[in-house]
Length: 279
Image (tube, rainbow, N blue to C red; front, side):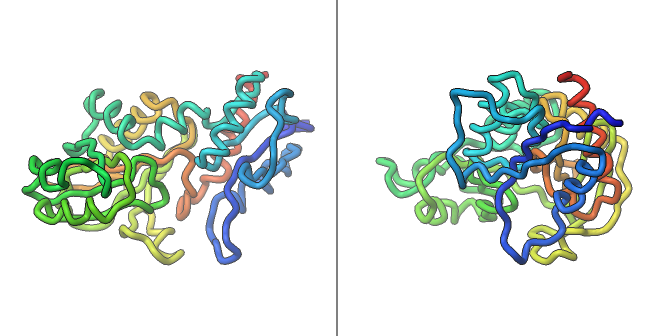
């Protein structure tokens, strides 16, 4: 008999294509079920969900960061059902503007960055809006982009042309850090932590799995602080190494943990810890 025996878990996940490979979900769900949990995989966008009664779960695992999944997790939380991660923490993390401000204010090593409203409908020309950014190289990120989508690399002088080609909305414009080598991806699940190196963008499964990497002490400390500041239990941090040392360039709530041996077991332990705290 384990804590999971008979526990009803709502696993909120987006539907993947038939060719999708390597997600931690493929290993995590069997482990949860082996420990006795009754796991319901829920694609929040694909059904109507009642909000006038409590969802039929004892615990939520919020793997997806979609708007529908966030609302469904928040509904469950309103009825006292714990969620890993919480909807608030996931929502804040997905907002690259507010999460960057939170982390930068706390002294974590993030690049200089700006909020810019880009698109075609502004009354002021893109050149005027972005004059301050005309020098240097920049990374433009959609405020709620994820999985490497909604990211553009551009020289400052060409930002206006890029801006006028994008959908209207808020964007994080981040100074591009000159660095050599691949990104360092740090994965965290509770007290467990591991790291891999991988290229960006990672297009193949082999790229996404990367290779095991040593975890520098200062990166480990910064990664732990990220979780504390954003309220995350299961998350990933992306770092690059430049002239000034390691720089944090992205955070993801409940990533895919590709290439990180031991991640499924660590996630089960952290989900169990959340269940204990909620019982």
